[in-house]
Amino acid sequence: MLDLNHQYLAEAKAQFDADGFLKVPAVLTAEDKRAIDTELDRYVREIGPTLPAADIVWEAEPMPDGSRRIRNLWRMEKYSPLFASIGSRPDLMKLAGTLVNGEPVVMGVELFAKPGRVGSVVPFHQDNAYFTLVPPDCFTLWIALDASSVENGCVYYARGSHKGPALPHKPSGVLGNSMTAAEVPNGLEEVPGVLEAGDAMLHHCMTIHRSEPNKSDRSRRGLLIVYRGAHCRKDPDAERYYSQVRDELQASVA
Ligand SMILES: O=C(O)CCC(=O)C(=O)O
Image 1: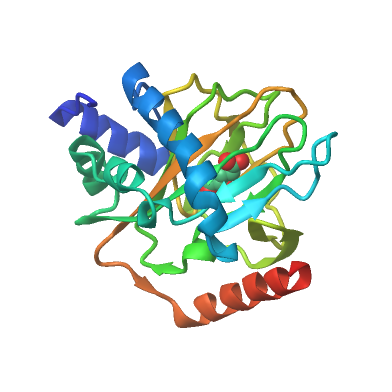
Image 2: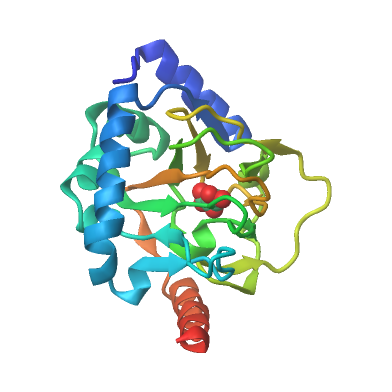
């Protein structure tokens, strides 16, 4: 459990508001990590084959032996009590309550696996192009299940970019990240999310971010928990556009 005293929360909020992201060290203990690794193995083995196509995304590029690797798992809280419970850990809910300006709600638990050699690019985007929330009181806690570095494709966060406008997004053709910013503003100050396993970065849903392919042999798994304020509503026009792009991409590979 994180030690979240009043001063820590005030400083975390100030830094999150200024930068649009924040490092949160030691979110997982070694024991938490072992339990998650065990559950993830079971999930892939037992639940994976039963998942609807919308809840599992495979890397487009096969391994040298022809086998395929998982890129993303979506809505993991629906299928696993452990992944449902990690999102609602009291300390994480307390932190979330401070950052979403109201009562926090877990919106989803996801895996971005980025396997060695075949882990693919995540193009520049703002998450709220996908989430379509008004107001955008929402953030993602990205927990490193493996050490995350420039070499194995860590996430880059553009400092202060959450204060800018909602960027128009267009289809990306990338399975698992169907949209990308149509134009990326000049002069972004990008900060790499270099993390030890068990550490986390969190970012605002308007923060521009991306990650590069994993050219190393080392896996770079991130477990993501998305939190929003209970007061957030969906923007129907933005939601319609996102659904259309997502469904067209799905149909093109089905
Ligand atoms: O894990 C990645 O490479 C990208 C993650 C991402 O886009 C996100 O956290 O919203």
